[in-house]
Length: 172
Image 1 (cartoon, one colour):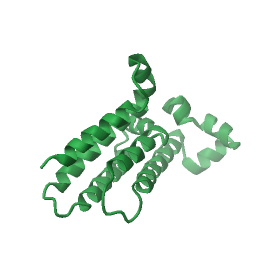
Image 2 (cartoon, one colour):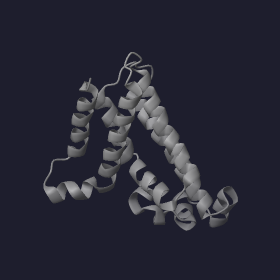
Image 3 (tube, rainbow, N blue to C red):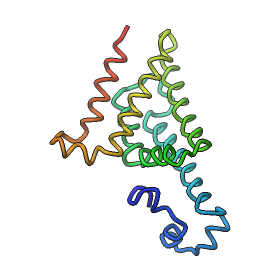
């Protein structure tokens, strides 16, 4: 519902109809529409973390920029993280935004740990995460609109993020 209709589509009635349960059943489990929406946001944050973790691969000790960008762009696009992040920001859901922030910090920490000999590893990791998140967020929200307007090829945002990542990694 969120991906197809945006935050306004995530109502008790719509969710109940989609799930084949009554309005009262949802109220019993979630307390209110806000409770239902909060549970959805929490779940999407966990899914984002899982998606990126799976994309990076467990136990890897080096970062492959293409693999990182694919994981992040897929999570923000197909996984709905762009809509969820926009929803968090617009709804001013600070408590849930903190769980999203933790996913971002964990990714930066994991990337920095992959280069323990690099004194700038933490700085580079933050730059990589910001690049990936900003560009994947924008691609997930407006890529389907902006790309055709410009006659640009699909995947241009991801390709630009990869080029910037290569530049960041090549800096001394």
